[in-house]
Image 1 (spheres, one colour):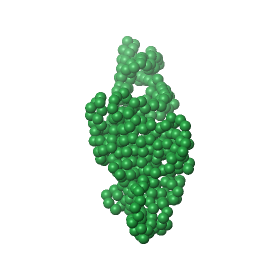
Image 2 (cartoon, rainbow, N blue to C red; image 1 turned 120 degrees about the horizontal axis):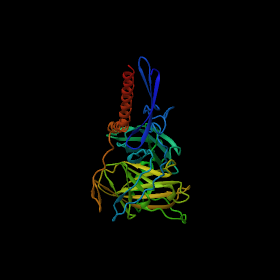
Image 3 (spheres, rainbow, N blue to C red; image 1 turned 60 degrees about the vertical axis):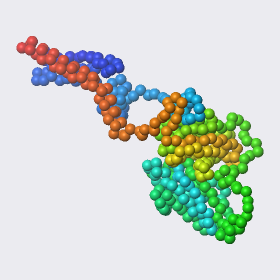
Image 4 (cartoon, helix red, strand yellow; image 1 turned 180 degrees about the horizontal axis):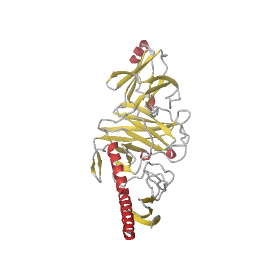
Length: 396
């Protein structure tokens, strides 16, 4: 019969559910018109008109929410670093390494090493103050912004001249990436003096004084509440987190940068600034921890230590008057491999897979997911064509 139309509802199995496909076919005098009445699905990642979660889950996924995961210490013994479940998600820019300040007559020469592990390195900003370390890019005066003068491989310097002798100057060097995101800052101080005064001081016999980074005065009555512990800090390297189980030391790899996190809820009340001082056999470095409101934590990015051994870490909490209201210390054991009582030797953490490999996996997964859908559609079309041809033969 000319102009007759056939409607069919076919169920196909996509590996998880049976889904309906609506099909119609019209028998005209000259040809057979077949229409697959299905919603379009172009797999472009955008849920467009005609697409829904049933027939196009790739473009229209079901909305889900993922609750935040609190890091949990894995059971073990000893004092080694123990992997935890998840790290906070945040962009952390590494600080400079080996920052030093050499005082002279009315000048201070700053030297530092560029963070070689920072791929999108943009440059550095130097802030200066005569009160205390500039704690962010808006504190103190802007002394310099750029890449600095390279005096060796990845080693740079900047000379601050025209200073007043006898006045201590505090410097913080911030690294920024190509996206204009700044590091937490590395700090140092120096006291310019005239050559005559330098000779006089050399003749004086005085007890050895600690550097200003280690001699911040403490308040008489620290704030009440639970004190911060060394095990509260999360040490992250290339996606894997470690904490101290014995509250005294934590193991890290010596050839990877380290990101350190501290939950804001665990910081003493009244804290304005958090600093960490690293003492590597007398070589002192001071870094600031940046308060990142996106993850509600204080963070700092440190370059790889590149040496084996124990580095003393002192975390200090300062109030608005730059007085210490609390501190905690522990050892960071830098090793070529991590030793654990459970796994004996943990190999070096592998790098993330290259992007092209990840894209190939995604494409293969999408093809596998819709393979049976297309097979089912082709079988339906062949079935309708054969049935309409059969009707034509019977009429003749």
